Length: 371
Image 1 (cartoon, helix red, strand yellow):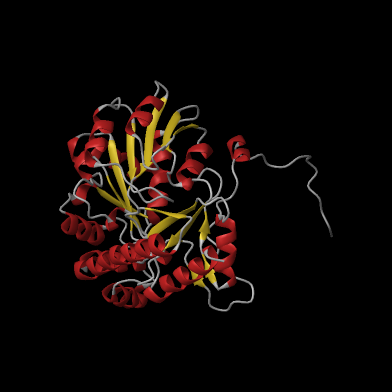
Image 2 (cartoon, rainbow, N blue to C red):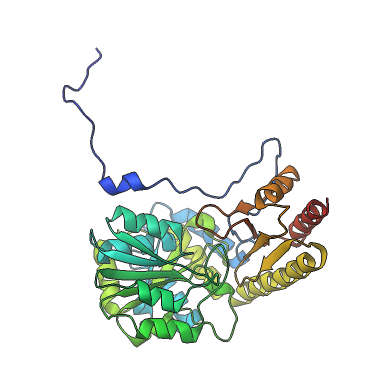
């Protein structure tokens, strides 16, 4: 018998959701191409540490057991590797979940959350879903701007979030500017530093955020194992925060939010310092090589400097466009990431791939720009 619910209407979602569209991940397929070169998602093309893969496989025999809800082994490994306090570390299902937990814990409907323009889009989604008002501080020099961030803060501000390095540009806020931002924030404003790409940076004037966490009670640094460590498929990240903030996160964190496989692989990965150094050095070398080739062979393209595992190309000759270059790359089986609304105009973001993949990109772009 077919039955129908007698009540009219449908369940109503949170009204803030009407402002949102689902997150769109980087393209991964090209019609008719069986194995495209995917350079759209800033994944590590060198893959995870062999020790991480071994640790992942070893967990298979114990998948019937819940993971360690206290995350002790992984927190200890992170603390020992980066010389941090394990008590100030909490791990999550990617740094995305930790950003969501921070917003849930500290942002109320009607509060303002200040974002540097090129911040993680999902953090903006979480804040909007929480009922917050988003205030955007522009980045005219394509990097976080301390003065604009401070000017955006009002009595209604509860949180300030910036990505350093940012995405899609790949630039960071220098240590001196980050400290100036922190020291001039009202103490009731929580500063959240999204360091998804921090593991790639070797510059002397870079501060990832841990020193600010140790200095007070209103700064948090989030990190991920998805980028340099090559564990994107396992969804594992971590945050470093003062005791008061860790306490707030723990009150709403689900007890088994990080899987045993993810934590085992991440523990082995973070301890394999030689491999992570190799990935970092390789990335820096390839960025330098790609930059030199673009500047030498491709008039009409600006290579925007990056310290992350991707680079941004801006088409400036008035003839060629990012869309046209993307089409040329896709016709050769290569998937870049066009920069959409809100990003720098007429730009293409491309992940640093394997050497032969980077060579393929350069060959197609040179032919396209000279055609």
